Image (spheres, rainbow, N blue to C red):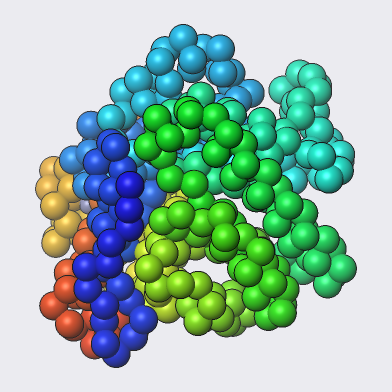
Length: 376
Ligand SMILES: [Zn+2]
């Protein structure tokens, strides 16, 4: 199970590659639609496959609480449970548990939290987070990390970096001690933290890199900080991380942020935007976003996009889709999600093609200008 670089852009740090897994190859740069509870909201695995998704993301914390590991285990793992045969990356649950603020207690051993559903108490240790991801049948397993909140003071970030280092080592030891990881053929990605502090980022990368196989994640960004420090950190990571390892920038982002991060050497992305914004009537387009609820679309018999090949754009008019949204018809949410996910996956396909044919840099400048305009 390896990551191979297929071509590298000469004008920027963009790279095209391929991560191989036992459930199929993932062409990079790649985007993962988010299937929090084992479903990408309103879309079927068939929709996702036809839209060109190579991999989706499942949330360990959410799946652990609902439906719970007993039911997913009885189904034969998450792939069988949700009828998705391609790769799944699972997060460690850390990010969600740390978001619980008042409901969790953290120590060097792990984190204890109360379920928001019924108040029951649960404990995630590095070992337990790995055990759950192995039971889910994950193809890319993430290390349990401590996420300092955006804007945290230096001492809090420093402690999170130290704890993440120790937990990453424990995750790795746990994986290596059993034979389940080896049999699964899964990848294990450690996560670099350190907020926007250069010294801490370097220290974090140094401490978790020894446990990285094919890839490594850049965490703790896209948590409310400004864009400038975020891209400065991505640029720093580009100079620090070994070029042969896949780089996964967690939680990013808008199409323009993805293009900029690719130009700084990032290979893998996930974000809730295409599906979440779809439910608010926002459609992603090459020249910005449009909100279908705008009254100027009420008599508009053109498709959402003339150039998009998705079922929504090849079949329905803006006026009809706006009508569905005005009446809260579920079909409207589904068509918007289908278009937005297709848009993101087409964006990644274009990025890979432009890196391959050596025109990524000029294409990027043209697209960033267009994407930054909003049609709302
Ligand atoms: Zn479309």
